[in-house]
Length: 485
Length: 47
Image (cartoon, rainbow over all chains, first blue to last red; front, top):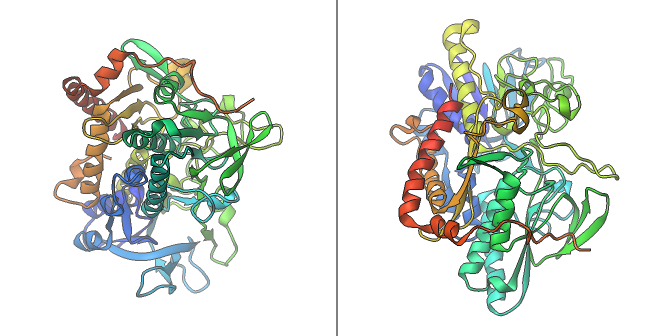
C-alpha cells in the first residue's frame, strides 16, 4: 500500500488529489493536508470584493467532498519536512499542526511514500510596512479579505453619493508583486460599480504597479494577433484605461503605507507619495514557512527550498544574464531536487527566473513583477504530477513521467472589467507559450496565431461560466473529470 | 511633475467597437468563438 500526502488544497493540490484518487486503487491512501477548511475559487474573489458575490458563492467545505471521494483530510498546517525520516524512523514524514476546532494546536507526524507540495503562496503583507487588512489597505486575496473589502468599498460608494470626492488606489503593494491581472480586474470592477451608481465623476481611480508599462502582466507583455494585425498588450490595455478614465502610476515600488497615504519609489530612484481614501493593494508572494531536516536533524531548508521559500524542482536555477534565459530553464516534471518522491505543484515550485525584464532603481530596489502564477498552469501541473505518481505506484521506477512545462503550454485568462449579464465586460486573453520562446517564435517569443486579446460582453459570460464550471469540478460532481484544467 | 499618467494619448475604441462589445447577437457569436479558442488552448496544455 502506498500513502500519498498532498500539502495544500488549492487549484494544484485539489486537482492532484481528485485525479490521483481516480487513478490508483483503494488499497492506496490519498491524504490532503490543508490549514483551510474551505476551497476557494479565487478568480471570483474580485466580485466578492465589490459586493457582487458573497463568500459562500466562491467557497465550499472540503471535508464532505473528500469523505465522498475516499480521500483522507487533515485540517492542519505542515511546518517541517523530514524527507529522510529522523533519528526515530527512517520513514519520510511531515510535521503538522492541526487548525480544526477539535484538534487545534495538536502536533503530529504524517508519513508518506510520495509527497506533493502544493502549498501555494504565503501572502507576504509584512514585506511592506502598513500593507494589508491588518494595516491600512484592503485585499481580495482570500474570500474573507474580499468580504471585508466589499464592506469598505460600500462606505466609499455612500461617501460618493453624498457628494464627497474619493481617491481609490488599486494595484501592487510592493516592487516585486505578481498577479497584476487580479489588480487589473478589481480596478475595472470598481470603476464599473461606481459608474453604475452614477457617481463616476466624483471618483479618481488610480492603478499603481511595478510594471514598466501597462499590459506587462509579469510576462514581459505580449503581442496579440487580432484580425491580421499585431497589437501589443500595452496598446490594448492603455486603450481600456483611456476609455474608462483610469489613471496609473507605473514602475513603482510601494515602500510603506500610512493611514491614507502610500510612499513609493520609482525606477529612476525618485520618491513620492499618493493619498487615498480606499486602497486595495496586493502583497508579494513567497513560499510558506516550512523547514526541511535530514535524518540527523541538520537543517537542509536551503537545499530543498529557494531563498524565496518556494521548492526547488527540475529547473535551471543558475544565475545568468536576462538575454541568456531560455524556455528550457523551466521545470518539466516538478520533481524536487534531491528527493525523487517529492514534487512541487502550482505556485509552490520555485521559478528559475522572472519573465519580465529585471529592473533595479539606482537605490538598489528591485521594481519588476515576479512571474504570474495562474490557475490554469497550476491545475495542469497538479494533474501531471498526480499522473506521474500513479505511474510510479503501478509500475515502479519504470512508470511514465508526465511533464507540464510552462514553456510548452499556453494559458487563457479572462480578466473581468465589470459584472452584469447585459452590461458586463471582460478582456479575454490567450497566450502561447506562457514562457516566451524567442528561438522558435522570433522577437515576440510567442505564437501570434494563438496569442489573442478581445474585450466584450461574451468574455464576461465566459468568466461567469467558468465560475460555475470549476466549482462543479472542484466539488467532484458527476463526470467532473471531463472538465479540463 | 505628477507621476500619475492619464493615457489621453492612447487610442480609444471607436463607437462601432464599443457597440459591438455589447451587441447581444455579435457577442453570442464571439462567445462561441472564444469557447473554441479556449478549448484549443486547453487541448494544447494537456499532452
